[in-house]
Length: 354
Image (cartoon, rainbow, N blue to C red; front, side):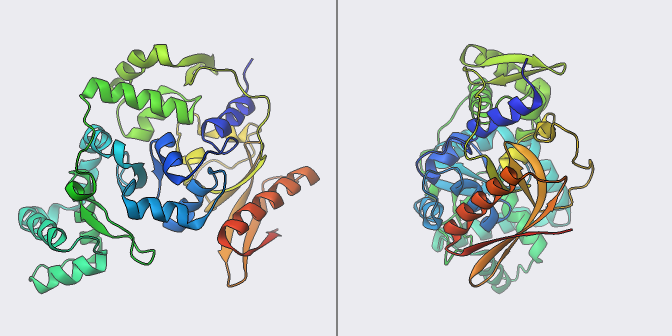
C-alpha cells in the first residue's frame, strides 16, 4: 500500500528535486509553471532542479525569451516556457482576471487609455522596468500609485498584451507579448485541458484532481474532462479516499539528495492544496497560517522551518526544528546548505533556533 511518505518521496522525483535535469529552460518546461513571486528565492527553485546549479542559467533563459516571468495560473508570478505562454494564458486567465480587475475598479473608466499608453510605450522602447513605465505615464499626465500600476500590468499580462522583457541588471522588465512570443502555440479548450492534465500530473504527481484545480485556478468540473482525455497517458491509484494521478511507472524506493532547503512558495509545497501535507506524514506541522518563509525537507518530509539570510561572505540558514532531528537528518540539511551556498558563491552556515 502506498503511504503519504511514499507519495511525498515520489514527488521529489516528479518535480526533479531527486532527479535533476540539464538547465533552467528544461526545468521550467518540464514543470509547466514555477511560482516566481520572489525572484531570488524562485531562482533557486529552478536552479536546484538542474544538474549543475548556476546563477546565470535562468537569467540567460529570461534574457533570451525562452523562459518568461508573468502572471498566469493563479493571481501571482510564474515562470513558464515561451512555448506554453499562449495556450496556458488563454486557458487560465479568464478565472484569474476577475481577482485582478476587481481591484482595478477605480480605474475602470481609464483602462482603454492606460492600455494604449503602456503598449505604445513598450512598442517604442521594450524592456522597461516598472519604474520606467511609472515615470513615462506620469509625463503623459497618467500618474498611478505603485499598486495601481502593478495591477494594471498584471491585467495586461493576463490579456497577453504584455509579458516579461529581458532583465536589466537583475531587475524585471516588461515588453509586448507579441514581440517576445511572435508565434504563440494555440490549443482549443479540450486540447488545452488534456495538455494541462498530462503536464501537471507528470511533473507534480501523484496528485488529485483538486490539486490540479487549485494549481490552475480552474473548477473541478473544468479539469475532469482533461483528466479523462489524458487517462491513457497517465496512471492512478486510490489513497485515503482520493484518486491520485501520475505518470506511468512505479513509486521510487529512495530519493537522493535527501535534504532540501526550499521556500514555502516552492512547487513542492505550493503546487498542491488538497494533498499538500503528505510532506508531513507524522502530523507535526501546525496547521493554519504559515509561520516561516522557508522549509527544510529530509526524505520529502518537512522537519524544520527555515529562514535564509544572505551576507557578504556567507549565507545563513536558520532552522526552527519541528521535532528533534537525527544526526543523518542534520547531515542531509548541511549537504543541502552546501549546494545552495555553492550556487550563491558564498560560505554555508546552518544555525538552529530554539
